[in-house]
Length: 425
Ligand code: PLP
Image: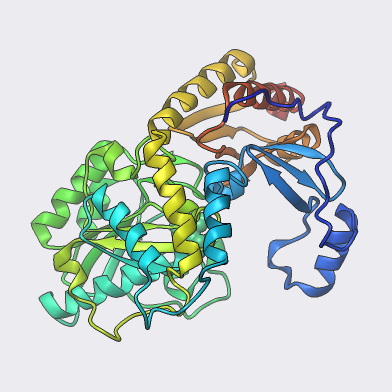
């Protein structure tokens, strides 16, 4: 993003309120939401109505610097001109038609992904969870067809997050996601993350695959070690297991390479993508090697909307821009700059436990009061979030400007300094 960042704390330019929306302020929208939505998201203070680049505006007209990017969805900022133009064009040509017909834009996006990575084949769904469902299903079928009916078990990791459908929440390594949804699906075991020996020890007669996030996202922005992922690859080769990388949060440029596995130099057999893949429209994908892909046959899996023309066109524009703009490598540099500036600004705070950064996936673990820091940032005009209890998570657009980073660091630094951990004061 070029051009000067507006100082969101003193901004006087109020984003235009979309004229097609009822005229309500943030509180009005919170009440309206409470009256009709299931309560799984809790109360939300801010109703966002417009975005442009790294900035968004709420229903009160307040401007924010968006360092969450819709949890790594708006990875080239809001309303990127190239993506917006393609959505407009495709929406006036063909929005949807089902996978009963060939969808040319879906093929174009698929080819683009395959031409830049290890995989030979792709399946498109509408979300990250659906991509992981496809991965779990194809791993089961591949094992049944190639190794016998009992090898359906998947080794997963503590702290991981793979989605909210029944299979993916079972695969998830966080008890809070599973509470009262029992009985869960059979065939998932969990071992500590980054613990190769534990993974090795848990392989048994029934094991068919290993599912791992190269960087735990919801689990607190915790990167795998190279040795861990390389060791899992070796283990899978030795025992003829499928290695599945869930790159839904850390893939597509976020950690400084188009795909996260390229950062580690370890290739999986199956990779899942989601979040930013559709350029802001709902989309997920499961990519795999030829020998795995052949476990699916006509009718074995599918999706009505998966990879529809509109989402595919937006995704194609997004991935093309990512590659042509060299945004993953630039994101890596921006991430290094951000952390250096942050350490300069906040290095003296005794409330900081650990800073974890890979590319532009940044976790700042505090000893205490992360939720209060989050609210202070929000009030000062910076959107971030908290994950795994006390970790501030920053997932800014990959094309954020240095000025944007400077401003975010300043706001964040002030918020952290204003909230020392009790025991640290
Ligand atoms: N896998 C990972 C690593 C994720 O971070 C997420 C979402 O946060 C998912 C899967 C699920 O994606 P979705 O919410 O699109 O179903």
